[in-house]
Length: 323
Image (cartoon, rainbow, N blue to C red; front, side, top):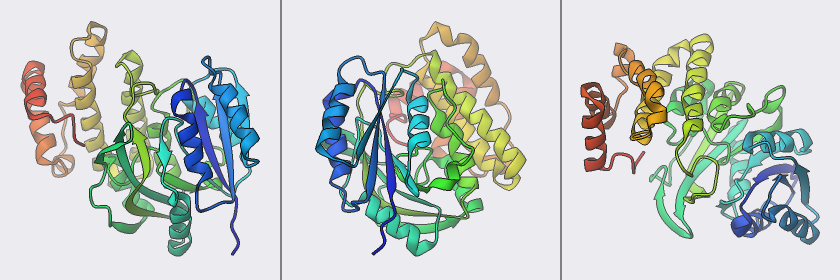
């Protein structure tokens, strides 16, 4: 059977502790025709050396050494160097199940799709803590319009590139915005808009480690306002290209604002940004209101009363722990 080359791009920065497990999970894939691109993003703690050692163990591994530029810069370096017909991404502190790429590729062939997605398991070290989608047996294929309505939920069709396999041509002329930390959320609508069909399996084949070392999992800081910027870019993209799905994008934007309001609590440097975030909660079209879940309605109502009320609600009900 013809097995086209799949390029797997792994940005590496300060993850030496987890890197071998990550790379071994890619090397162990049942789909063997892989190009594994380890992008050493100026690692200061020896991860770059380990990348070179791993490359000596497997001829499918190529190492790209570059100056530190952030995760988006590292992913772009991999995209520029890749040779495969298909491309996937794995973060270097995560790992994947042995059948992930074979499953995604076979679904892509069967459904004539340009993007293939799978479920994600959140892992506390090596223990499964929760699933993005508990319905592991779900399988479906969507049109572009359907996927653009699904994306703002960030539930099954997520903003992450790591639970997906893409046709390489979707990235032609597109790269991740360097210097921002939510570059995947910013770029994902542009990629899905180019795909005629997007297929999905709920099987949790991607293992997402809940650690503190990666770009968006550590301390909350001003740079996380990039999430708001990515959401605003998404709104503009939907308004121009997918006006029928704009209420879904507005719903996702409301949730982004609410999450940022909660996680920035107690941080004085966020005072100005919080005014902007709260201002965005003031307008709610009937089309968007009809899409809100009971939980999101409750959060929105509390935030409109006052941030102390909202913070208390979030703490009492643990609403930040589940999607």
